[in-house]
Amino acid sequence: MELTQATVNDLLAQLGPADGYMYLPGDLDPQDLTDLLAGRYGAPHTLVLDGFSDPTIDESRGAALLVPFEDRAVTIRAWAYGDQWVGTGTARDAEGVERPVLVVAHREVPAPLAVAPDEDENVDWMERLRRITGWTRPAQRPDVDWAEVESRLGTAVPSDYKRMVETFGEGAFDGYLNLNQEPWTGLREDGLLIWAGTEHEDLYCWRADGGDPDRWPVVVRSFDGEDLLFDCQAAEFVSRILVDPHHPYTMARYFDTHWFMNYRETG
Image (tube, rainbow, N blue to C red; front, side, top):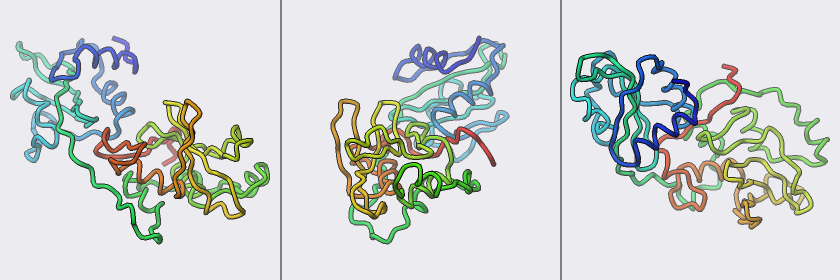
């Protein structure tokens, strides 16, 4: 079986939204499937390793994924995504043969901890974003020549955005919100500079009014051309959509942990 993201889509569609599992062909490399799922959902939790289950696993951490295999699971890794648990690894079938498996189970979605709307204005939102995403790696692009970028753009750009690019590099928050490595100018006639975007074609911009970029508000230009303004900087905006379930563009209902998928690992 050739594994691609399209193959994974087909397998998950066969299992459906409710509880289900399947044994996969023996020539499939379980690590390849784990890597593809990690590319979607981030780092997995290990439920079973070499036949030994994590004794702390309960319903809040994916225990339902182990039910179909009883004591036959060999290695199972799990992800939370919305109202579903997804797991993969290996388990013994009824004949005792160890085979790759894919399993899904219903998940009760916890209420995420929201960022307080009146949080202190002195919060360092870039540090908050580091903690939310669990980012511990070295700065990925510490030597960006911002003077050259700003000269080419004809304007300075917000300082928190510069720190985001220097820290995280090229990639996407939760594998979904793509961080531009320099602002795009495609909406400049509308007074907007684009600093990020999503696969749903929403564009995350600044309203580039006034001489102080650190006071530019964020504007979301939706795929249908409508604008929604947020009176905050980019790092605060990203932090809030990751953890605030009431935000109009929240991602908190889909993931219980958050990460930054770096497209060019440098350490």
